[in-house]
Image (cartoon, rainbow, N blue to C red; front, side, top):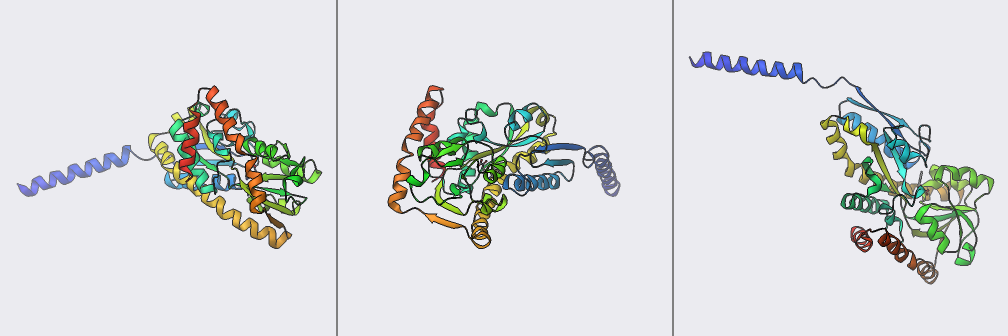
Length: 336
Ligand code: 3IO
């Protein structure tokens, strides 16, 4: 009796397992294909993080999702990225929010001169800010990651040692960083990072204001033999997905991507901070770049010129009905 009963239980279990195997076979490998657009060249950090995300997603979905990556603006360029992803020209895209400053008011508050010390801190603060406020600017897309570059320094063809040297100097920057250059008396020239290569070669600009990994990744050290250490202001980035495409994904894939969001953001900030160190060493060794530090007194003068910028942002954001003071308070507490 008992033996017979155990026998039927075993055959029943066997039946269940067979059914599961037959009916829940995962979708065929590569059955979901996603296009991921990026604007700068493949060796730069936004594209390195893109390749890392691709590998992780393909691994964690066991190949059910395959990502086709398009670096170097081959699918969408810097300025058309957001609208291109909303329209579905690419499924996924990487945006630099500084290229459309009026569009990303809340998240661009991270590029005020608030003293973010590195990319890891900036990336986590940006992601937290996004998660708390879920800004309207992102309502047509799904956010897959948020990160920042490291604080900006002046890379130039001429030495910059004082505010007098900055006066009227044509330096490339965008968004919040451009406002800071202007406050220092320089002449900010707005353009996305990839256009800077030609602008420097032609002499349209005398340098740029951004994170130092570009000295190596874009070989700017060949043109810019001087770096002035200002360690001021980051650029916020986001990886976004077309909403319709997102809705079409199975829940297990969506979960894998959401579980990756914070991890990917942190990975990118950490990677960026590492690249800065390598780029500084490389610039000194291979191109003899001179790194200029401002004296404490000079630095105080530079910082003093920036005090009005945050107040001005608060005033403008308040007028748009945003909780401006709280946003600044939150960023300050996230970056402590
Ligand atoms: C950046 C943009 C593309 C590739 C590498 C980069 N490193 C820093 C940035 C920030 C940026 O977009 C800019 O305009 O300085």
